[in-house]
Length: 435
View 1: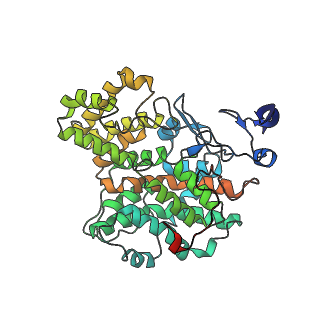
View 2: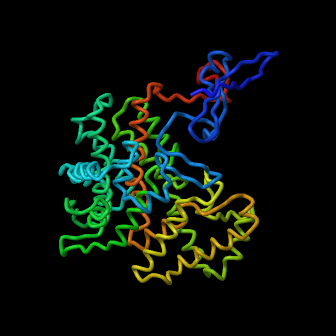
View 3: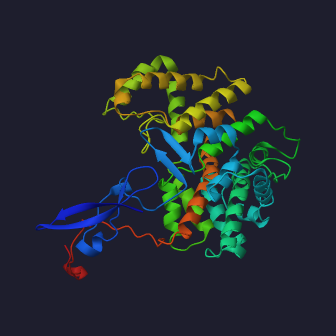
């Protein structure tokens, strides 16, 4: 909505044009430049869209300077302390936290959709056993539109609701199937008497040989990981889902595009990169070598990077990182891993970095990836599955954002423009005259 003020662009020979300034409920004002090209013949240039608002959204808000993350207005710290993942899913999808009756109905619906079509296991057999789980997951999610094509009318609210429930419910089953397939173990079917997260843990680590014993601390830790990763405003994968979905494609295809984007090491693979950094540092001497490592990081010619610190949006301590550190203590204590060398190394490295002016001046604080890899490793989740876990959690955010876009009256197919710097028009020469 316009706040009544105008932004004036002066250009050319004394020309000027006014643009309305839009104001959100919180956050920076936005200059509405939709009429720029029509009135001036010019575009804006913004690589990476760092200064561009691509949509209006009511779902997630981040204040990077404060280190604040809100889902529908609720601080992430309160949600992680007082809600479970499916309550958070309901909030992101519906806009409000559920009442007891609403939660019970929502949980029942999700639970009854957790099984996948039996034919999907035969589809899985087309992949190599050593294929990366994210490659498999991208294919499985995209293939869901072939198995569940009875509710793909994106203009029908009922169809959109069914597809959303199927994606949220079946993603844990698909992630667990991709893991079991890589091990050569039989798939474990979901059980309707378990919670969403307990069900996932059992499908990941259970076998038909014996009854799997649920560890409540492990389930609670993983549930918190899901909550912390459920949505994060207009990040790369969410923007991918929105852009893909803007063409009118079905939600399974749009979410598959999000999974593929999340696979990148600069996005969902960052926790894996952070864990690898800590493991390499541990092999090189651990805490005793921190001084040398930090000196290399500060040397622009060394090529060394401090993974897990800094964020495109946060210029303060990532609130998710604080919660993940608490989870580290809980999990390592429960599993008898208090003396885990990687965790001790991570704590020591964090202390050094937060007391070093080089990092403080650059506002490089730990982000959620810094600790999530350690937690998942302690839970027994292999490194190759880290991004699959992230995909599972982020699915609800992708779906909520996709639904919001589809119902937005201003929604139209995405079409970014460019600043062309290639060859101008030229003629094709016959091949025998080319030199």
